[in-house]
Image 1 (cartoon, rainbow, N blue to C red):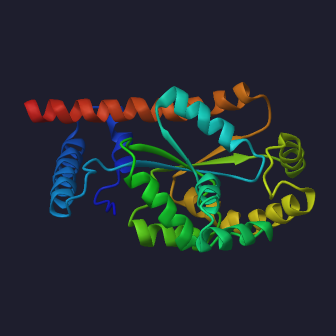
Image 2 (image 1 turned 180 degrees about the vertical axis):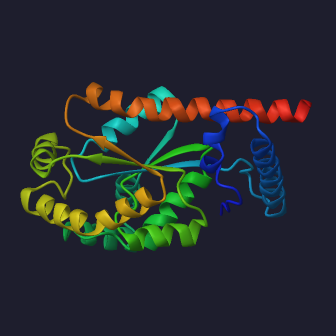
Length: 251
Protein backbone atom coordinates (compact mmCIF):
# COMPACT_ATOMS: atom_id res chain seq x y z
CA UNK A 1 0.00 0.00 0.00
CA UNK A 2 1.34 3.41 -0.93
CA UNK A 3 -0.08 6.48 0.83
CA UNK A 4 0.66 9.93 -0.55
CA UNK A 5 0.99 12.80 1.94
CA UNK A 6 2.26 15.52 -0.44
CA UNK A 7 1.70 14.78 -4.17
CA UNK A 8 4.99 14.99 -6.10
CA UNK A 9 3.48 16.73 -9.14
CA UNK A 10 2.17 19.54 -6.95
CA UNK A 11 5.80 20.32 -6.13
CA UNK A 12 7.32 20.05 -9.61
CA UNK A 13 6.08 23.33 -11.19
CA UNK A 14 7.80 25.47 -8.55
CA UNK A 15 11.09 23.74 -9.37
CA UNK A 16 11.18 25.48 -12.71
CA UNK A 17 11.77 28.74 -10.87
CA UNK A 18 14.08 29.88 -8.06
CA UNK A 19 14.32 28.37 -4.60
CA UNK A 20 11.72 30.57 -2.95
CA UNK A 21 10.48 30.30 0.61
CA UNK A 22 7.48 28.39 -0.70
CA UNK A 23 9.75 25.83 -2.38
CA UNK A 24 11.80 25.49 0.78
CA UNK A 25 8.64 24.68 2.72
CA UNK A 26 7.55 22.20 0.05
CA UNK A 27 10.92 20.48 0.14
CA UNK A 28 10.67 20.19 3.92
CA UNK A 29 7.24 18.59 3.47
CA UNK A 30 8.72 16.16 0.96
CA UNK A 31 11.57 15.28 3.32
CA UNK A 32 9.07 14.60 6.11
CA UNK A 33 7.01 12.54 3.67
CA UNK A 34 10.00 10.40 2.66
CA UNK A 35 10.80 9.83 6.33
CA UNK A 36 7.25 8.65 6.93
CA UNK A 37 7.33 6.31 3.95
CA UNK A 38 10.63 4.82 5.14
CA UNK A 39 9.30 4.37 8.67
CA UNK A 40 6.09 2.76 7.42
CA UNK A 41 8.06 0.36 5.20
CA UNK A 42 10.23 -0.69 8.15
CA UNK A 43 7.25 -1.08 10.46
CA UNK A 44 5.50 -3.29 7.91
CA UNK A 45 8.68 -5.16 6.94
CA UNK A 46 7.96 -4.11 3.35
CA UNK A 47 10.88 -4.12 0.87
CA UNK A 48 9.80 -0.93 -1.00
CA UNK A 49 10.92 2.32 0.61
CA UNK A 50 10.67 4.59 -2.44
CA UNK A 51 7.21 5.62 -3.56
CA UNK A 52 6.55 4.31 -7.10
CA UNK A 53 5.88 6.78 -9.92
CA UNK A 54 2.69 5.57 -11.58
CA UNK A 55 1.56 6.47 -15.10
CA UNK A 56 -1.82 5.23 -16.29
CA UNK A 57 -1.92 4.67 -20.07
CA UNK A 58 -5.39 4.85 -21.60
CA UNK A 59 -6.71 4.32 -25.11
CA UNK A 60 -9.10 2.09 -26.99
CA UNK A 61 -8.13 -1.30 -28.44
CA UNK A 62 -5.78 -0.62 -31.36
CA UNK A 63 -4.91 2.91 -30.25
CA UNK A 64 -1.21 1.98 -30.21
CA UNK A 65 -0.67 2.53 -26.51
CA UNK A 66 1.15 -0.79 -26.07
CA UNK A 67 3.66 0.06 -28.80
CA UNK A 68 4.27 3.50 -27.32
CA UNK A 69 4.72 1.99 -23.86
CA UNK A 70 7.60 -0.11 -25.21
CA UNK A 71 9.25 3.02 -26.57
CA UNK A 72 8.85 4.79 -23.22
CA UNK A 73 10.41 1.78 -21.51
CA UNK A 74 13.41 1.84 -23.87
CA UNK A 75 13.92 5.59 -23.61
CA UNK A 76 13.05 6.41 -20.00
CA UNK A 77 13.49 3.14 -18.10
CA UNK A 78 9.91 2.54 -16.98
CA UNK A 79 8.50 -0.89 -16.20
CA UNK A 80 5.55 -1.68 -18.48
CA UNK A 81 2.60 -3.46 -16.89
CA UNK A 82 -0.23 -4.24 -19.28
CA UNK A 83 -3.52 -4.92 -17.53
CA UNK A 84 -4.45 -7.13 -20.48
CA UNK A 85 -1.19 -9.12 -20.27
CA UNK A 86 -1.61 -9.60 -16.52
CA UNK A 87 -5.14 -10.90 -17.11
CA UNK A 88 -4.02 -13.22 -19.92
CA UNK A 89 -1.22 -14.54 -17.71
CA UNK A 90 -3.77 -15.33 -15.04
CA UNK A 91 -5.96 -17.07 -17.65
CA UNK A 92 -3.00 -19.26 -18.65
CA UNK A 93 -2.82 -20.67 -15.10
CA UNK A 94 -6.11 -22.49 -15.77
CA UNK A 95 -7.35 -21.44 -12.35
CA UNK A 96 -11.00 -20.77 -11.52
CA UNK A 97 -10.16 -17.07 -11.43
CA UNK A 98 -8.55 -17.35 -14.88
CA UNK A 99 -11.60 -19.13 -16.33
CA UNK A 100 -13.89 -16.37 -15.08
CA UNK A 101 -11.63 -13.73 -16.62
CA UNK A 102 -11.63 -15.56 -19.96
CA UNK A 103 -15.42 -15.73 -20.15
CA UNK A 104 -15.74 -12.05 -19.27
CA UNK A 105 -13.31 -11.03 -22.02
CA UNK A 106 -15.08 -13.19 -24.60
CA UNK A 107 -18.28 -11.29 -23.86
CA UNK A 108 -16.49 -7.99 -24.45
CA UNK A 109 -17.00 -6.93 -20.84
CA UNK A 110 -14.60 -5.42 -18.30
CA UNK A 111 -13.09 -7.78 -15.73
CA UNK A 112 -14.13 -6.99 -12.11
CA UNK A 113 -12.00 -4.14 -10.84
CA UNK A 114 -10.80 -5.81 -7.65
CA UNK A 115 -9.34 -8.68 -9.68
CA UNK A 116 -7.37 -6.42 -12.00
CA UNK A 117 -6.19 -4.06 -9.25
CA UNK A 118 -4.82 -6.91 -7.17
CA UNK A 119 -2.95 -8.30 -10.18
CA UNK A 120 -1.44 -4.85 -10.83
CA UNK A 121 -0.57 -4.32 -7.18
CA UNK A 122 1.12 -7.72 -6.96
CA UNK A 123 3.18 -6.99 -10.07
CA UNK A 124 4.33 -3.59 -8.76
CA UNK A 125 5.25 -4.88 -5.32
CA UNK A 126 7.28 -7.74 -6.78
CA UNK A 127 9.34 -5.43 -9.03
CA UNK A 128 12.51 -3.50 -8.11
CA UNK A 129 11.76 -0.66 -10.54
CA UNK A 130 10.08 2.45 -9.14
CA UNK A 131 8.61 3.85 -12.41
CA UNK A 132 5.60 2.09 -13.89
CA UNK A 133 3.39 2.35 -16.96
CA UNK A 134 0.03 0.72 -16.26
CA UNK A 135 -1.38 0.03 -19.69
CA UNK A 136 -5.14 -0.29 -20.24
CA UNK A 137 -6.38 0.53 -16.76
CA UNK A 138 -8.64 2.05 -15.48
CA UNK A 139 -11.35 1.96 -18.12
CA UNK A 140 -14.25 3.05 -15.92
CA UNK A 141 -14.94 5.20 -12.89
CA UNK A 142 -15.52 2.03 -10.90
CA UNK A 143 -12.07 0.80 -11.98
CA UNK A 144 -10.56 4.11 -10.90
CA UNK A 145 -12.23 4.16 -7.51
CA UNK A 146 -11.28 0.53 -6.88
CA UNK A 147 -7.62 1.27 -7.64
CA UNK A 148 -7.53 4.25 -5.29
CA UNK A 149 -9.35 2.28 -2.59
CA UNK A 150 -7.12 -0.81 -2.76
CA UNK A 151 -3.77 0.89 -3.43
CA UNK A 152 -4.47 4.07 -1.48
CA UNK A 153 -3.02 6.43 -4.10
CA UNK A 154 -3.73 8.15 -7.41
CA UNK A 155 -1.47 7.92 -10.49
CA UNK A 156 1.11 10.64 -10.96
CA UNK A 157 0.11 11.26 -14.58
CA UNK A 158 -2.28 9.79 -17.16
CA UNK A 159 -1.62 9.38 -20.89
CA UNK A 160 -4.61 9.12 -23.24
CA UNK A 161 -3.97 7.93 -26.81
CA UNK A 162 -6.79 9.47 -28.83
CA UNK A 163 -7.41 7.52 -32.05
CA UNK A 164 -10.40 7.39 -34.49
CA UNK A 165 -12.55 4.29 -34.16
CA UNK A 166 -12.10 3.15 -37.76
CA UNK A 167 -8.32 3.27 -37.37
CA UNK A 168 -8.46 1.23 -34.16
CA UNK A 169 -10.65 -1.45 -35.78
CA UNK A 170 -8.28 -1.69 -38.75
CA UNK A 171 -5.23 -2.04 -36.49
CA UNK A 172 -6.79 -4.70 -34.26
CA UNK A 173 -7.94 -6.87 -37.16
CA UNK A 174 -4.58 -6.65 -38.90
CA UNK A 175 -2.30 -7.45 -35.95
CA UNK A 176 -3.25 -11.18 -35.90
CA UNK A 177 -1.79 -12.04 -32.50
CA UNK A 178 -4.07 -15.03 -31.96
CA UNK A 179 -6.04 -13.34 -29.17
CA UNK A 180 -9.52 -14.71 -28.49
CA UNK A 181 -10.96 -11.18 -28.44
CA UNK A 182 -9.56 -10.09 -31.83
CA UNK A 183 -12.59 -10.58 -34.10
CA UNK A 184 -14.84 -7.94 -35.64
CA UNK A 185 -17.88 -8.48 -33.41
CA UNK A 186 -15.94 -8.53 -30.16
CA UNK A 187 -13.79 -5.55 -31.21
CA UNK A 188 -16.93 -3.51 -31.83
CA UNK A 189 -18.32 -4.55 -28.44
CA UNK A 190 -15.05 -3.57 -26.78
CA UNK A 191 -15.14 -0.17 -28.46
CA UNK A 192 -18.73 0.40 -27.35
CA UNK A 193 -17.79 -0.45 -23.76
CA UNK A 194 -14.68 1.72 -23.94
CA UNK A 195 -16.54 4.75 -25.32
CA UNK A 196 -19.34 4.43 -22.79
CA UNK A 197 -17.19 3.99 -19.69
CA UNK A 198 -13.82 5.60 -20.38
CA UNK A 199 -14.87 9.22 -20.98
CA UNK A 200 -15.72 9.91 -17.32
CA UNK A 201 -12.26 8.62 -16.33
CA UNK A 202 -10.58 10.84 -18.92
CA UNK A 203 -12.62 13.83 -17.81
CA UNK A 204 -11.84 13.14 -14.16
CA UNK A 205 -8.08 13.09 -14.65
CA UNK A 206 -8.29 16.10 -16.94
CA UNK A 207 -10.01 18.04 -14.16
CA UNK A 208 -7.22 16.98 -11.79
CA UNK A 209 -4.55 18.30 -14.17
CA UNK A 210 -3.03 14.83 -14.64
CA UNK A 211 -4.13 14.05 -18.22
CA UNK A 212 -1.87 14.22 -21.31
CA UNK A 213 -3.84 13.69 -24.54
CA UNK A 214 -1.83 12.21 -27.43
CA UNK A 215 -3.00 12.36 -31.07
CA UNK A 216 -2.47 8.66 -31.91
CA UNK A 217 -2.50 8.78 -35.71
CA UNK A 218 0.68 8.53 -37.78
CA UNK A 219 3.76 6.35 -37.75
CA UNK A 220 5.04 4.88 -34.49
CA UNK A 221 7.91 7.41 -34.48
CA UNK A 222 5.65 10.36 -35.23
CA UNK A 223 3.40 9.45 -32.31
CA UNK A 224 6.35 8.89 -29.98
CA UNK A 225 7.67 12.36 -30.78
CA UNK A 226 4.43 13.65 -29.25
CA UNK A 227 5.00 11.49 -26.17
CA UNK A 228 8.72 12.11 -25.64
CA UNK A 229 8.49 15.76 -24.44
CA UNK A 230 6.15 14.77 -21.61
CA UNK A 231 8.64 12.37 -20.02
CA UNK A 232 11.65 14.51 -20.86
CA UNK A 233 10.08 17.39 -18.94
CA UNK A 234 9.12 15.16 -16.02
CA UNK A 235 12.58 13.62 -15.92
CA UNK A 236 14.20 17.05 -15.89
CA UNK A 237 11.86 18.34 -13.20
CA UNK A 238 12.49 15.30 -11.02
CA UNK A 239 16.27 15.72 -11.31
CA UNK A 240 15.91 19.40 -10.48
CA UNK A 241 13.77 18.47 -7.49
CA UNK A 242 16.29 16.00 -6.14
CA UNK A 243 19.14 18.47 -6.73
CA UNK A 244 17.26 21.15 -4.83
CA UNK A 245 16.65 18.70 -2.00
CA UNK A 246 20.38 17.90 -1.78
CA UNK A 247 21.26 21.61 -1.85
CA UNK A 248 18.79 22.29 0.97
CA UNK A 249 20.29 19.48 3.06
CA UNK A 250 23.81 20.87 2.62
CA UNK A 251 22.76 24.41 3.59
